Amino acid sequence: MKIYDWHIGVNPRRLRIFLAEKGIEVEYVEVGQKDRRLAPWYIEKYPHALVPMLELDDGACIGEVRAIAGYVEELHPDPPLLGRNARERAIVAMWEQRAYEEGLLAAAELFRNAHPAFIDRGLPGSADPIPQIPALCERARGRLGRFLRKFDAQLAENEFVAGPRWTLADATTLCAVDFAQRSDVTIPPECRNLARWHETVSARPSATA
Ligand SMILES: N[C@@H](CCC(=O)N[C@@H](CS)C(=O)NCC(=O)O)C(=O)O
Image (cartoon, rainbow, N blue to C red; front, side):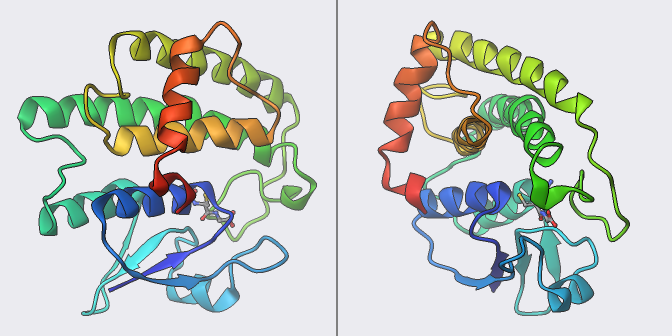
């Protein structure tokens, strides 16, 4: 099995962090180009035109970080990174989805509607040109502010995002916070719980995967 990767992409990083925490070594194939586009041969092979993508030895192509993580967790249950029982799995899924929708997608909205390299690629995964909408940047900043404060409150009560153990929800939240920083949205000084958590998870070897 191999993973099609884009070293600068936030979702590929989300998966690499998860796999590093699992302690699994996988073959990576870089499909990003210098012009910040995916290689044409990859888009032909995988018309969803998104990374990361896991290709199994039988040729099946599995996209979406959550789907790939679920597949890996089933084959390699230790350490459990999606929850150890039904209750924990529900809580991890809930916070992971919030981190994705409220954090990572908001950071992507800000980045993609502002960066000159994405002038006609306001959304990923489409062969059709999608113009940027600069007005979305302001809305995205508001979304990110609410995300950072919500997760700060959650981390006041919990060591990690979904409870006492590191899970995929931490990988997604870390990627969202770091991605927001690329657009100069930083952790507000009053969000001390989030800052404490960010320092801890950033120091884990997986953070540089
Ligand atoms: N929902 C997908 C999101 C994947 C995604 O948006 N990937 C971005 C990189 S972070 C991408 O492939 N972009 C291609 C492009 O911008 O052309 C997942 O969870 O894997």
